[in-house]
Amino acid sequence: MALMGYDAVYFAQILAASMGMGLTAMVVTPVIEGILTVSVSQSVIGRKLTVSETWQRLRPRVWVLIGWALLRSLAAAVLLFAYVFVAVLATAAVAQASEGLAVLLGLMFFFGGLVLFVWIWVRLLMVAPALALEGQRLWATVGRAWRLTRQSFWRLFGIVLLTIVMISVVASIITWPLGMIPVMSSASGTGFEMLAVTTLSSVISSALSTIFMSAVVALLYIDLRMRREGLDVALAAAAAQAGEPQPGPR
Image (cartoon, rainbow, N blue to C red; front, side):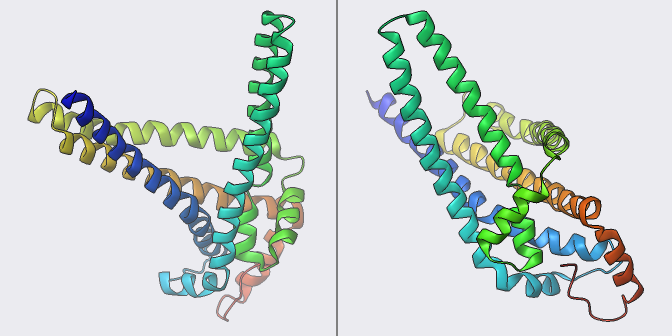
């Protein structure tokens, strides 16, 4: 019983640490995307902003970015709950007539929900960069990001999927040696060692994922605007005046 209590405390600590890092990443990710978008938008015209200059440009939009992160997460939670509720009711109703059909319907709901989630996520991927760089109101920016990604879903999805795979591989290579520390120090490692290693591995993986993915999203945003709106022409004009203070592309 004591061992079970110890395991429960240990797993509760890991769960609490993971939830804390998840909440932090949820709020921080749009801000990092905004910082990198501002930086990239100036880098492509040959200007190098300092950290202070980048922050000064982004600071008026930070709370909007955080608000978007919270709203996005809340909306996702509500929609997920509603979708699962409908799926369970429909599957339970069909199960009364045929268990086979109920299983088939459950699979259809699962994969259909997964596809719907990925589609909406990709279509809204450019909201944070647009909020950081364009200075419009939240709902206007959401609509703009939706239009900006039109007819580009598969290209964006492929790039993002490849990025996720690359991040996972690199994170595994970096964090795998950390998992060997408790094993090397003792047969099974103490609870503190395991918790410390798990937390450190999660922090490293989360940091890599957040920074690298945010950089990719920022580059995709600039690329989309170049393809759709001729932003490269505006950037070329800005580059000709690079000696003068530039507010960044709008």
